[in-house]
Length: 610
Image (cartoon, rainbow, N blue to C red; front, top):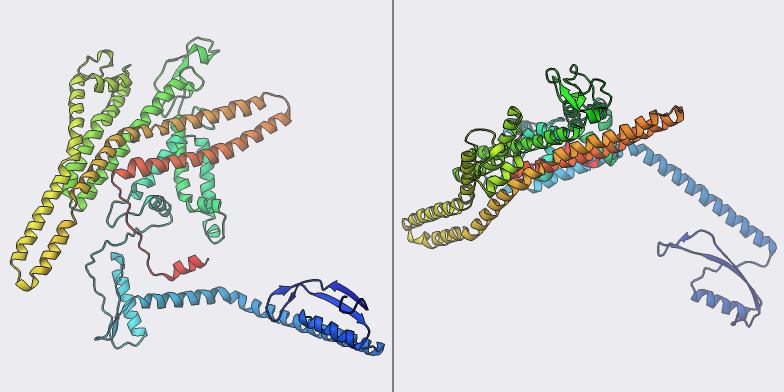
């Protein structure tokens, strides 16, 4: 405007969508403008300004016919370009559609080729024999298969050199491999989540197949809820092939992977539910009539009248007459609490016994004498004795207070037991067990570090005697090697480690036993929560004559049962059973500091690609 002093007419409009710049390759905003002017001098100024801003100039003739011709030519070129672009897009889509079904196979072929060359790059080339030498791990049962595969490769490749398969002695610890199937895979994954076993270490999965779902069922015992879990597990197992080929969400994938774990949890829940005699918190006379009746003849109020026994005990599980009586909660509290302690002491003893077999397998007599033996003594002199008292009290029907017995066993072991005496010689036995437990602590703490130090010094001296018999040329090398070997043993570090291990076991014996009381707490909570839903929702709604209220109550009861009892409570009991195995059971014998065996496999590449 200033260059022409206002002697021009200017009009502009945005070009619309962003346009690809062929120079920079970026999408840019374009603006179309037209300038009307008069005179050659103004034209020169306008062209110079447009050139400075890198604008594209298109001359427009003054003749109207030529303008229309240019317009027709531009429209024709645009139509041809659009037709060409559409044809190119159509051809590209057809080409991609034709190769789309082959893309996964091509991708897998490339991955296999890359993995083969990556494995070949790990081999060493022997210059003298002009062959490749490779070292790797394989399961012992796979050695014949590997030899057959190498022979077939020799024949197929028409190689003039035979392939030698030689078993070597390895200095480093081998990887760990456990053969699993569809049933045991989920249990092995539960254990591996804590830590992969060392090579030739005892595998807790063998025992967890039974103990894990059983401890879950102790907390989740209701055979109505167990049947619901069983139906869900059977659905996943029946549709196993179809669901296994589909891509599932995270929750369904977790449930499908643990389908056999859920199956066993459901079966054990039905079993424990029959023992507790609970079907959605409702008792049934499944195994015959009750052994109790109300104290008064009218039996109008069992909550206040109480019960009296008039026939043989109920054949299996809890008598249904206990439900709703004033003795129900004290009886179930006592039963489940003592049962939890018995289960806990039994499983912890199993863990310590497995540490014995593990040490015996590896020929470690020091761990057997100075770790396994004092641990068994300490645990069973205290909590094994408590389990014995529980069994004796159940068998004799004694009214002894076990809390008082265990507390005064430490505070006043020589005091007369009085009414809390369950058998003859109990006081003498308690004093003897207490002394044995006290002796077990230093037995566990001191001997092992000093014995290891003595064994190390003997080996070092033996190595020194061997050095005195070597030649002068090798003397310096042997002395340096012996000195480095001697410096590897750190007595203070081993002593501190043993002290921490001993203190952890002594304190853990108390805390781990108390931790098993979660079996009692969660079982009682599950039962009471189920009772609340049944009585305060379903029965309350069923007391009205309105069909709408009954349907609403039934829907709320079904929703609460499905989402709270069958989902949240299931997950809660699962996590608590997981903690009992990881902390209370497996830390008695399981190190879990190994690494997994990962074989070269094309199927694993396919799974990763999927």
